[in-house]
Amino acid sequence: MNLKKMLIPAAAVALAALILFVASAAFAGTSEAKAAEELDTILEYVIPGGGEYEFEEYSGSNGSITGIYRGEQGVAVELVVGGFADDIHMLVGVQNDGTVTSVSVLEAHETYGLGQKAKDDWYFLASMLNSQGDLAITDVDAITGATITSSAVMGAVNAASSYVLDSSAPAGGALTGTADGFGGPITVEVTMDGDDITAVTVTSNSETPSIAGAALEQIPAAIVEADSADVDIVAGATYTSNGIINAVKAALESAGASGGGLTGTADGFGGPITVEVAMDGDTITAVTVVSNSETPSIAAAALEQIPAAIVAANSADVDIVAGATFTSNGIINAVKAAIGAE
Amino acid sequence: MKSVSYKLNTVLAAVVGLACLVCVLMRAFAPVTAQLPVVDIPNLAALSIAALVVDGYIDGKKRGALCWLYTAVLAVLTFWLLPWAAGLTSAGEALRVGVIGGALFTLLALAYVSIREKLNSGSGNILSPVCVGFVLYLACQGFMSVLL
Image (cartoon, rainbow over all chains, first blue to last red; front, side, top):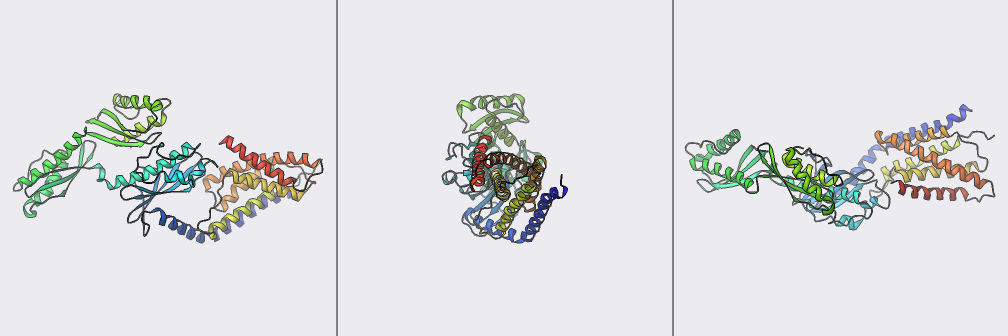
C-alpha cells in the first residue's frame, strides 16, 4: 500500500474545500446583495400593487409563515411548508381584503417531472389566484401524480390568505354590539378569551364628553373586572352607562345567537375544515363541522365520530379514525384552534 | 495483479470542486433570473458519472484496481465538504449530502467499472466511456423514479 499515493486524493479534497471556502467568503457580499436584489424583483411582482414594502416579523401561531412583506395594497406572505421530498419555500401575494393575487414557489426539491412542476406549472399556480383562504384540492388544477405537493402549496396559499383575513378582523375575534346611549348609538367591541371578557372598547359614540367621560372610561373597565355586564352605573351618566352595558350585552348575545359557539379552522385532506364548538363553562357541549371539502366516502366516519368523541372526552385529544387521518387531524386541530388549545 | 489506483477520487474532487466553484460564481454574478442548480440526487449522480467518464479517458485501458472502502470514504468526504465549503449546503444537511453522494458515487463507480472492464475486453470505441456514462445516468434517473 502506497501511503503517498493514498494521500493525494485526500489532499485534493482538502485543497478544493479550501479554495471553495475562500471563494465563497470572498464573494459573500456580492452574493448577498444579489439575493436582496432578486428578492426585490420578485416582491415587485408578488406584493399587490408593487411599490415600497416593509418587512414584518410574524409572531402568530402558524408555523409555516416565516415573514410578511407589507405593501400599500396588500402583503407578500413568505412561507415554508413541508412538501413530498423536502420543504417548499414560497411567497404568496394577498390583497388587503384577503384575495390571493400571486403565488411564487421560490425553492422546491420535489420529484422531477412530478412535484417539481409546482415551481412553474402555470395552470396549477393560476388556479389558486383570486381565492380567499377557502381552496380545496378539488378547486385547483392539481399536478397529476403529485397530490401531496399540490396540497402543500394549496395549504400555503390558504394560510397566507387566512393570515390577512384574520389580521384584518377585529383583534382576538372580538364581538361587537350596539345600544342607545344618551346622544345616540354606542358601539362596543368585546374581546373574549373562552368565557372571560378580556377587553371592552367603545369604538363609537355620540355622547357629551364632559358628562359621559367617566362612564366611557369606568364602565368598560368595570365589566372586564367583573367579567360580566352586570355592573353598577356611573352616577350622573346613567344613559351612557346603560348604553355601554346594553351594547356589551348585545355583543355577548350576538355570540349566543350564533349558538354561543367558538369557531376554528384547520386543514383537512381536501381543504380547510371549519368547526363550531359550543361550550358550557369549561365543558365542550357540542362540536359541529360547519364546512369541509373532504371526500365523503373516506371522511364520513371521521366527520361523524371525531366530534362525538371530543364531546365525550371533553377534550380535543382523542384518537383519530383509521383511514381518515388527515380529516381526523383536521377536525381535532380546528377544535383546538376554536378553544384556544394551540 | 493490478496495482491499486487512487486517481478516481482526485478526479472526483476536481469535478465536484469545479462544479461548486461555478455555483459560487453564478450565485455572485449570474443575472437575477438565473436558477442555481440544486444539490440533489440527479445532480450528484451527474457529477459522479462525469468524474467516472473523465477518469476513464485519463486512464485508458491501463486502469489500476480500486480500493473500494477508501474510494467510498473519500467520496463521502468530497460530497460532504465541498458543497458545504461553497455554501451550497447548510452544516446540518452537509453530512446527509455527503453520505448519499458517497454511496451513490461508489455504486455508480462499481457499475461503471464493471461495464468498462467488459468493454475493454474488445476493441472499444473512443466514445465508450461517454456512452456508458450516459446509459448509467438514464438508469439512475429511472431507478430514482422507482425510489421516490
